[in-house]
Image 1: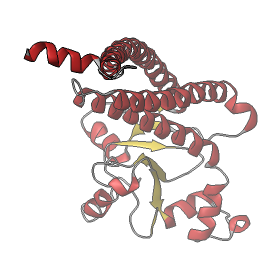
Image 2: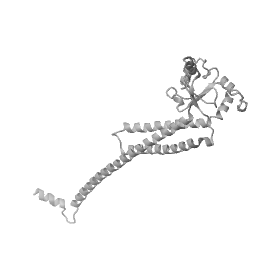
Image 3: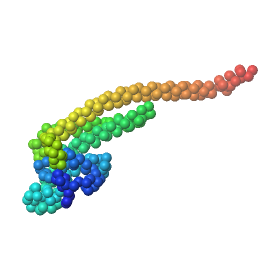
Image 4: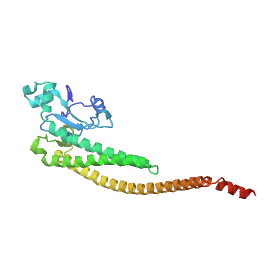
Length: 276
């Protein structure tokens, strides 16, 4: 997102007029702490606040002021000149590795939310499960388990070898210039910048490990429930079979009593005996 007049990295910039438009786009964390990168000078990176802007769910915003960015970068002729199009070309050549890293984090968060939704639906149906619903639940968890296992393997392999096949812009978390100025006036030192790439990768692997552990427990519960359900179904089928056998026996007895090779049947003799 490129702005013509507002520079979020300028401690003297008046952010009051931009606060509402930025909140409408889910950008809310630019006043105190900044995600910055040397690959993107005078630009800030920030995950979109989904509560304020659901339309940009699982997105991040890279933004800044066009004049300040072009002045900091310098020559943009190779990318199309000192204009928004040139800046877009400059960013596009450097954002791929970082975009994949952030995209993987968003995907893992979405998988965690989906797993929580499956668990909540199962809890709401407690005591009202049928064999059909249980089969649907098993199918849902099986699909989620297969996706989780493959994603965990791919993420682990990528994080172990990401530097060998693509460049990744390094992002750091640091105090904003405005906060640094306030700390300086208060006689306090600003905090040291904190590298985020390695932290993001560790968070990905930790969250995946937690999901795999929870998935193991869910599968054990479903296996036990499926076994109990099979036993109950077998018992019900046995009762039905006994009922069908009893009905068949009754029908056979009636048919036998009505059948006779003589002129008089068993039923007629019995009726004659009862009426005499």
